[in-house]
Image 1 (tube, rainbow, N blue to C red):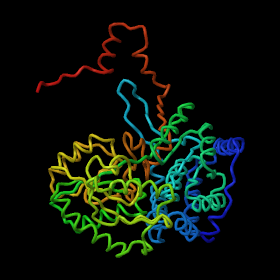
Image 2: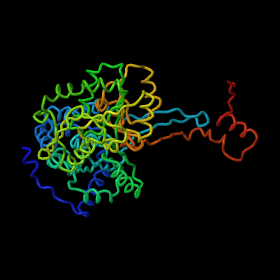
Image 3: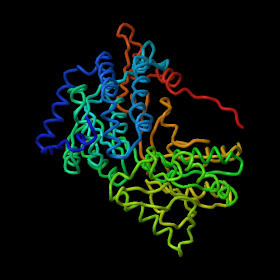
Length: 486
């Protein structure tokens, strides 16, 4: 199916009654118990993987139509990324789901205590537009692996990708996953339904709406939000390699990545060296004119283009004191913003909000400690990137800052490590997923205690309480301990 055909597929609006019916059908399937066996879970993941293989070209075309993504980038950050997540989950799922035994206090012996993971029920996944395939199916992998059914809402702002998902998911994951297309009305109607978990990826403003709606039914939520993910760099690093990695992480997907480096902090000396290498790195990755590079994407729509181009225009006014290092050109007709680097001060328009576009501000600070204070005065970021070979600097950032993730020497790449949790903290989100962390997110850890009736040792703590029972209780329930001073 071509990108043009995907783009023109009709998106049928769903009435509130239809949405209620859709959610009801997902719940009905869950209540049959068919989703709980390991075999069913593995079957769904295998089917999703087959869908990605069979229709790789369809999804690639959709991503090109929505975001101008190169096929290699589509595989690296979306289709292949998901295939790797599925493979990792299938390899370890049986072990992850095993009951876990824990010790039992002496006062309760003989007895056994076990934790088992049980699926929550019906999960709602609301996905964004910037990685429209990955950020919808990524949470779905965990929800299915945990034994749930899923209602998934792709972003209407990525219509080709949304249409591709709506076209192929019913064929490969019928019943297990239901796609609801549409815009704000459909999302609002979905949030009026009762779910057992809501997983939302997007911005803080909508995140608050999701959380408020979830509170009506005491539904647990995972919020994967964003924020201004900073970079700190000092003179101790190989500037050529550092510049190349920063450019890669920042300008991937035209800067429309929630964990993209948002701005760079460094001393005047470090930033001067970095500013010399960044234009070279941009040309190395995207050529002398990135507008002709097939590897360089475009802004998702006119509104996104106007917002980022407007911030850049404000900062490039002569009175702002900003200094252009690279890029700066824009083309509204093609929603193109060149990979741009600009020296700014902390009060710059570009420093007021998450940029979510291909503009990288450089902000001067006096030291690593000043950079830490700068970061801590703002909301906790989704990711923090430190380029320094100084062990003391690394320790300081580890101990004195809080962020969803902390990377040394590379941006963005932590998402590709399946054993690491991905999630934010504070304003950048709550909860996490990927790999085994997804299983815990979409499961209830049920405590099971088994004590045989054949030997009723609990009689030692039943009333009435005589002197002997008091001594037994004192001895075996929170016994007193002697602690040495110092």
